[in-house]
Image (cartoon, rainbow, N blue to C red; front, side, top):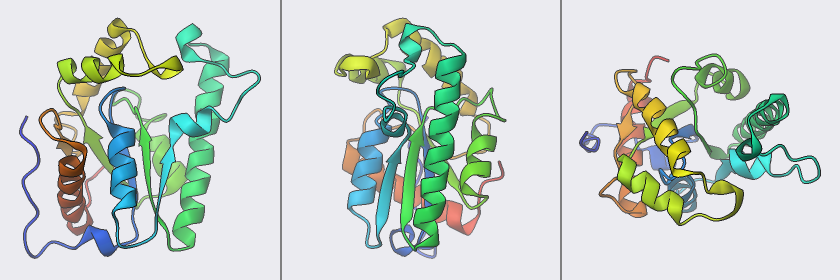
Length: 200
């Protein structure tokens, strides 16, 4: 799928607006790199809130899904999402934009988008970052520690993420884009989302 077209001249400027953005995508999509770059290059104060970073605040007793998905890992993911949502609301209440990144699945609406809407608020703007499977596998191979997933798991997650097509959410295929180019496309997408928020 081609990348989103540029925003029109009449579209709002997202760079000067206080926003809450949820960047969705599989492991290896580049969510964290794009989110950090986007937050670093805005004209208004902006925070990057990484679900994985918050989840890893748990040191002793950390429930790593790579060791097997269970009630403990599920509970820690839910806790991390609530913590991220609280932080986002706090930043927004103080005039600071935020961008969150998470691998939200389209087939789990109550836990995924519904949960983020409850935690952050209805003004949250979701955008899907979905490069091709080969790109995701290549980027995942460059990871280390518990953030590197088996190829089979990456392929399974990527396949589930394809469910976002037809959802009405904006999708950016950044297979052939570097981080600054992707951040520019993200701005274009957000300008349109501000003018006409997606229904979700």
